[in-house]
Structures are given as C-alpha cells and as structure tokens.
Length: 460
Ligand SMILES: [Zn+2]
Ligand SMILES: [Zn+2]
Image (cartoon, rainbow, N blue to C red; front, side, top):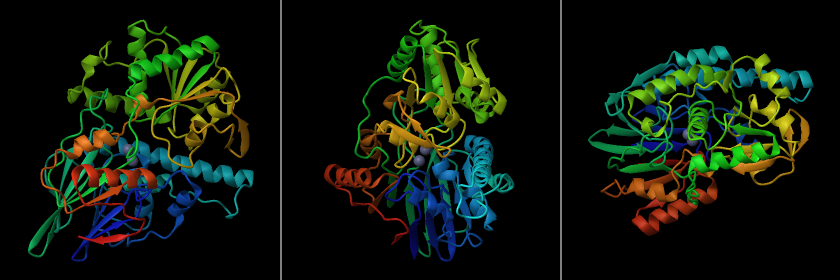
C-alpha cells in the first residue's frame, strides 16, 4: 500500500510537506514553514504529524521558506536522514536557513525583552545550531539523474523555472509488484521570464500534485521593466523612497538587474539604490555564477548581467542598515523579507510607511495574513514590532515580477502530459484558488482533480 499525506501546502500556500509512505518506508517532499495567518503560524508549534526519527529522507523542491524553512525543526526532533535537492539549492540553503534561524532567535529575544509573550520565556522554533545540523544533511543531485531515496523510492528532479535551483520531483514508488509514479510540481515558474528558464515539461505520471498559487488569476501581462520604471518615476516626482520588499535570493537580484538595465537605456536616472539584506552579499555571487552557466537569457540584460554599479550599494551590517533611516529621496531600498513578515524591511517600513512621499512596491505573492497582503488590500495601519504604524505611502503590486505561473501558464504546463493522471491533487493555493483551478482541470482537461485538506491522507 502506498499513502500520501498532506501536512502543509493544502488549502494554503505555505508549510508544504507531503509524506509518501510505502512498506514502512517514508519520504517527505518539502519541509516548509507555515507563514501568514496566526492560526497557520501556530501550526509550526504543533507536534509534527509524523515520526521525524523514523523518516527516511527528504526531497526539497527549492529554497523558499515555505518549502524548506521547517527542516531545522525536524532535525532538532531527531531526523537524521539525507536531504536531497538540486546543487544550487544546496548552496543557497545554508544562507537561507541561517538567516531564518537568526530571525527566530531575534524575534524570541525581542518578545522576551518587550514582555510581549505569554509563554515564559518565548523560544525560537529552532536555533542557528539546528540550522547548521540541517545543512550537514544536504545531498545535492543533478537535474534529470535518477537517485534512490530509500529502497522503494527512485527520484528525478526537473527544472521548475521558478527561482534558481527550483525543481519538480518525480518519485517512482516500488510497491511489491507495481510501480507508481508521483509528480510533485513544486512551485512552477513562468514562461519567458527574465533570468529564469522556462519550466521543464512534466513527465507522464500516475498522480500529480500541482501548485495553484495563482490558480484563479492571470498576471496583468505588464512587462516588469515598465512596471519598475513607473514606480521609480513616482518617487522621482515625490522625492521620496521607493521601498521594495523582496526575497533576498533571486527576486532581489532580478530587481537590481532590471533597474540597471533601465538605467543603461536611460529610461531612469542613476538614482541611489540600496540593497539592504545580509543574505544578498553571499547569494549574489552564487546566483550570477549559475545564471552564466545555464545560458539563461542574460543577453537580455545590457551591461553584461552585472548588478555592480557606482549607484548601487549593498549593505551587510546592522549599522549600515540603520544609517538608511537618514536616507534622502529620491532613492530605492530593496530589502527582505518579501512579504514583510520579518527581517530588516520592517524597520524601513516603520520609518517610511507614514510618509506620503514613499512608494512601497511588492514584487511577489503576498500570503493571507502577512503585512504585505494587508497593505495591498489597502489597510491604513499595520502593526510592526508592537507599534501601530499609519500608512500614508502609496502601495503598488508589481505583478510582472511574480515567480509563479498563473492559471493559463499552469494549463500550458500540464499540456505536456499525454496520459491523464489517475488523480491530480491541487495543492499550494488558498482555498478558492485551489478549488478554481481544480475545476479548470476538470472542465478543460477532463482530469480527475481534487483539493486535499490539511493532514488528509490519500491511498495511491
Ligand atoms: Zn517558491
Ligand atoms: Zn511556494
């Protein structure tokens, strides 16, 4: 018997954890942290719904926190098996996990100091030492090459075109005299996107898990260059600061690339640009090396794909970050986290949101319950570090920068599958997006599509 448990990324976009079980062996696909709504974040603290000491192996599709951020927690709880992922993911993950652990520790310390905790004392979900232990479990594999993740599971990774190192995972399960192929889409990228290759076509499979972040939406079709130029022009007029919350790996580099290109094309002047992220220093080099090696459309970027420019400053230390409080506009600050759920962007937001000269431009999906989502929905106050901050800034959603396929892209991607899967599980989407997309698969593909619930287990 083969079972598949949905322990996150089910009727929500965060916390992706899918557990395959066969003949007493287990394999976990993704080990994401829940983010956004409080009821979801609290789920990170619940007892893990499977045995972590008995878990055979983990496969990670990519290094976004909602797919990898819970890994140090299960290592802390005794998981000691291999963690398979692509080579770029293995290089970026140590930086991401160390940063996540640091934020966990800082948040706990802040809550304890401010007396804002009902738990005495507030604890981090995991420590930097746990993050280091998790990194020691990493086993990088090449795209396309099959590998064993236990006796019963054979896995292949394909490029998902979502961010550097992102993968979809095909798992072939050997159950006595039958083999069953399960394809996990991971997060599916967009076609013709700057700096990422198109997603690989999906192989045929018996069961498909497909993400549905934009399962009910189409991207505006606006070009990222035009969108970015427009928001830069706004702060040139107000002489304010353009604050772009962005994930430090991938999205930040993409924004800097395009700003540089706009500058080279003389569509915007060389205004001061500050990349304020402790992770960006370390990841930019990794990113550029892989992009150059993978023949991504770097020729689209004038200036040789470099983000280096006299007007671009990278800030690493806390002290450098604090100096940005004095920054005079017009200028750009790119800082993480991308959903304003933590990190340095918070202290910039606290300073800049009350100013009508500020433009805040979001460059990715904003999950339910995050400050980013509230701001996009037009809330006039947000709480940051316990204080109510009034919002007088203009808030813009840069749809052209989304790293996710919209529903049309997802349907195009599924057209690569020739034999209908027995069941398609629509995951990694908020309730309505997942239901909408399941309906589209039923109507347009005539596929059997279901939306699993959290902690549901299906027999394959
Ligand atoms: Zn992602
Ligand atoms: Zn995701």
